[in-house]
Length: 467
Ligand code: BG6
Image (cartoon, rainbow, N blue to C red; front, side, top):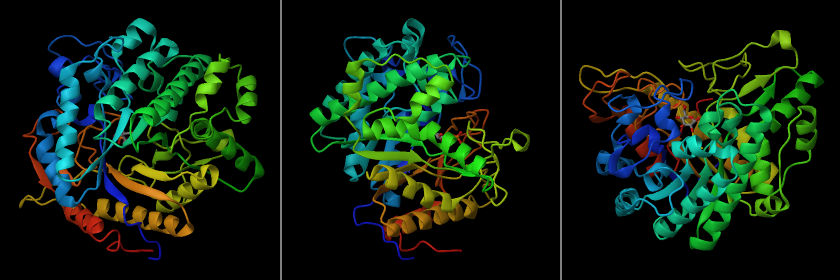
């Protein structure tokens, strides 16, 4: 392997509050949109009543067990842990004037625990959840006032944790709102395109306001966006397929373009016009958007293909995205196509486009694991997946791409986002809990735990080029 990981490369893992913490009503926490999706992003939106329960209500009980989990991450040598703050722990309904002290105190304890081991927090302000109060009373991100509520929340946590947290992200997979409007912007799933893009616009303005606030408040702070890096290839070399691929890649690159460049790209004018989309953008909004992010972060699980021919269109089971399957790639048990080279390609695409440092903040394999009679879990499939992707990261570094770090998704088993399953496991650490919520919650090291420890310890030198 030629590519060398930089000396201060941020190795680690990534989780999200609503997929690990549980304690969904503890210490004054309000209900979030995630609490209304007990079956995950693809499940129904369910009103909560006292006494009902969903798998996420306890999740893996990280709220109470974080010291044990952080110690295990430290044992692997993590330099960085990505998690999110649950907005509803800080502002339970979203529109309060003053924050909830008990919620703030929890994250103080969490960040202090990480600091004991020298693990840098990378904090997402909003990971697939917002206060349900804002949805109920204001219509979520459809209402401009949500920008102010978010800014208040962002300024509150920047002030509180400015000496503990240097790295921040605004909205998780901000482009997902196009596919899951309730999860992304708190709008009903059947909302029309104008409503969705208006809400997205408000969120982009809020993101820029958070960037400005971070720059003002957090000394040495760095703040990035977070994109679902759903890179698409043309299914054939037909010019029509190429053009359609460019169009569909722009659907998600649009978000990065606004956040990294500070203005709406020219191609969106035609897109809005031809799709009858009306978005109200004020002059002040345009000025606000000029405050741009310091780095680009993204998730990468799979690539997909595009064809301009509707007859050939056949959908693959993707993470909310309906991608055409690539005939040259194998798939995971959940039908996600495995494409390590796609990660090198994506890193190059993003670096060519933005010339900003990149941070891979999610990548991993969701798979069923078997616990052997002796208690071991031999997850070679996960090791191979991660190894091959990291080899491609090294290649991209050798290509000249500036990569800040890599946080694999779900270093400890957690509740999956799309269908709220425990059996779709990503972890180096096994958690004893099944899809029905049975289990002791006991933690157990998998084979990949030791593998990742060696990768971090050797700063990538132990990776194997298996091509
Ligand atoms: C990303 C999300 O889309 O993919 C995570 O940011 C999510 O929250 C991850 O967990 C994997 O998806 P899933 O559905 O397998 O959990």
